[in-house]
Image (cartoon, rainbow, N blue to C red; front, side):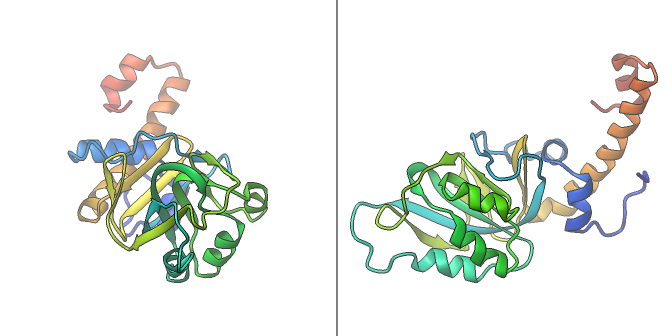
Length: 223
């Protein structure tokens, strides 16, 4: 990898080079030290995937009555997705139902959505796995969301573990966790993460060639 930072770093380039830990480190350096929710949200369909895109947010609530307009806002959210969107389902960790499944995955792919992050449960996992669609969630639940949970708002700031996800923010998810990069520092953070990826490669090569970890840190200032 070249040590120089490209003038423009596209989402496709980020997916090839960056990771959640790299972005977290760069956010730390920029003074943003709480951008990764400490929640058990893990990859459900594809184990070794790096999902990087733009936040498309939905806010969910539990319910215990008949919904007069079932699925209305969640369908609106799915149908209004744009290419490279990642749907964020802020359901406060509820396990009342599986709020994401095969049919929503199929519909969202038609609009360019590239993955979903669910602070709650999902279902139809085997079918979603065959579609090679990245799904991150707390776990599985076979119940339908109808009359159990529903979207109450779309395209608004939402919180996961107190971390704010705003529409259009850069979001990344992999086996290490999830991180969101506020738009006001995105360019700075992405460029710093790109540089750190190169520096870590140098450190790795030096240690493989026999340099001690202490000497490598003294030399490169990266760990």
